[in-house]
Length: 99
Length: 219
Image (cartoon, rainbow over all chains, first blue to last red; front, side, top):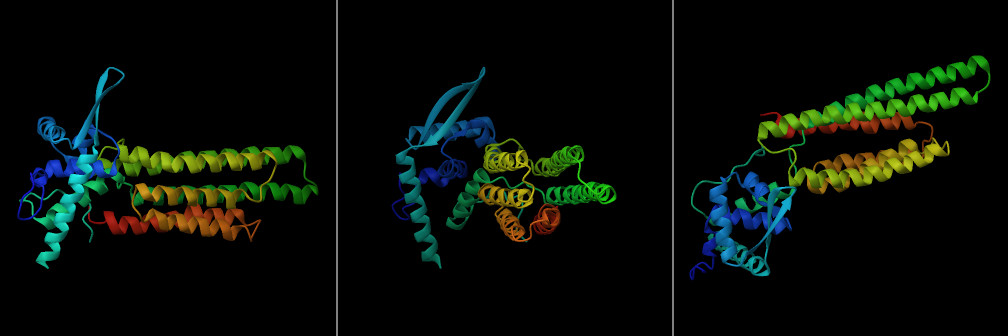
């Protein structure tokens, strides 16, 4: 999963997945629609990336209802938090190295 | 000039861009930044108009006292009702007009007015304001007029300070201003209306103008 040279997490190479993780770092829980609006992506596109993050154990999915409408919310797992922190640490090293 | 509606970068992920994207998403998902400076100006104008009307109502009341030589209980309760009604009307008009400009701005930016960020901002603002409103009503119940202006300025300032964590950080300076005015007013009891006009009128207009100039001038 990790790029052996840079230490960057390949899963976060994608901007949408990176965006989802960033948003979940500062929001305990967030709905599918709010994510869609903040990231400015289509339903299908977002759904694919969310499944990917879920399969990697980085996020948790909770399905609920508001009235009759489904309301799916997402939150970060401990594994996800750790992976994201490592990714940021690697980015930091890279940026410092360039300068 | 700060970029008002930043977009995610389109090119491949370079570390600087990744960091920029992360920061952007964290900001966008945690702060409601569509507050318009024009909202501040509108609220300020309403407050100044309200203060002016309040002053004329008071002047009328004292005028009668001068000519008659005594206060009548009826006059006093009528004055109380008039001033409270005025305050409520001013609050509603100020709220609606500032809501309008922020609504327009969020439409322009394509951000939903009712998102998680605006909800969070709303509750963090409303809870201290509600506490302040109940406190002020409690004072009114005992005909304690002297501390109404300082208390409303203080509670409003604290509400803004709290809200600044969930919107433009600049709001914090408006909060500081209101708190300082509220405290200063404690030492100039009897000039509440002037402090009130300064805090809710002049400060709002100054703050709104700066915000408009800083973030909205170019679109």
